[in-house]
Amino acid sequence: MASSKQYLAFILDQFSGLEGITCRPMMGEYLLYYQGKLFGGIYDDRLLVKNIQSARKVMPAAELELPYEGAKEMLSVTDVDDRELLSRLVKEMWDELPAPKKGRH
Image (cartoon, rainbow, N blue to C red):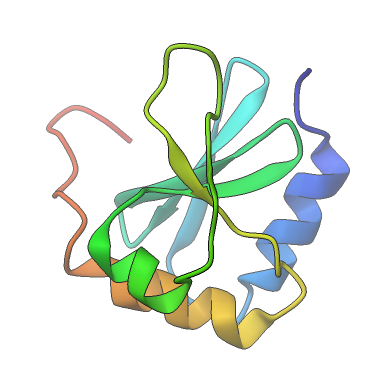
């Protein structure tokens, strides 16, 4: 099941307080970037972020979910209504995220 444009618009609005949030469509889903670094995506109308230490620190009770079959598990962000949490999460993750690959995004 592909993610809806309505859910994408909702999530992007939730991140509207952060400068540098962009998205890229990918096979019916959406990859999310913060200041050029991939931090997560929208998969089947679920917000998932990379399973890295800084994200687990901000959301210690987050469950792991597969974005799609054969992918690495990601952390599920269930409190998508909390703009402050979302901003803090992405800011905390930024230093730990790998630099963008050349020729991408």
